[in-house]
Image (cartoon, rainbow over all chains, first blue to last red; front, side, top):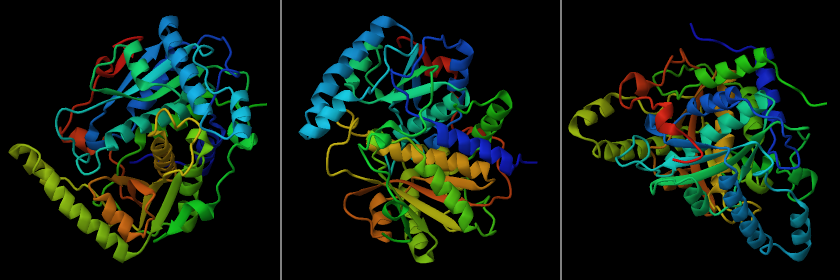
Length: 213
Length: 213
């Protein structure tokens, strides 16, 4: 018989969804993250759906300060470049944001997509679905982290090639996400960029349609 | 004070992760899906992380038989093409799989990515992160569906342009996933393609690395 979930259990899951946050360096504490916690995050990733059961994910668990420093230097360069793309008033606001926690978090995980060398069922008409499977694994980890009362942040202001080089990734591996993981002093009530007024929350009217746009 | 989750609550979430399945047309029942269930799935999507708080998702809830038929025709064409890419013995196995539930499921949801018309914080160095935000929303829905004891399947054997035309999607909207949703007679214990031996389960050794490949 299949396991059925009840309303109380659903409310637990809704809390996990609602209280998950993108955590940055100003929230991480130095409390060590036990290997057992990392294992539970990896288990969650491995339970993700994958197109054609291809499981195209590769996870590099990073504790090395040398690797972290290389990645952090790439962040510094890329965030400087990104800032310039915004109008002056936004640039000032951008500068005040803490946008990563590469050094502050005890654990980083670089998540790669391994390009296939043969056709994958379900991936031939929409080639990007392999990468999407890896993203599903990351989202599983993010929610599992919150269930473990552990913070996670996704850093995308990076040159993927720098990260690839830093961990000796093979040619056919593509960086999907770079994750910072650690205990936190608090989980914010709301997304930081929402509170700061950087972007407004979208309405249902803007995002949900019936049968046609 | 932050909400902390305990071991019992984590076990509920682990069950949701472990028991989520990709559901196809041979499992869906005709039991109607209440609007309230659809709302809870949409709520879950809206709680996903998004790069720069851009919320770039667009969800088209489809009940129209005319739309479903157009999408189903695209599946038939694309799966015929895909099958030809495999060796003869695999082709025979491919033919036996039920790979979608477009018509059998009461609700379809086409999920799009709305390309931005201005720079997005966190998306300028890695352009695909906007699409990845939409995938996170889909994975939230998938897990929420399982928590609601509702089945969901992701169909990727489709021509995205056919789906765009069928729902009058604007030029700057890109199809990320096409979802089939409904009650089921059972959730399988294991992924179907694993049970069928189409692909083997990968080991930790193949997928997890420390500091370097």
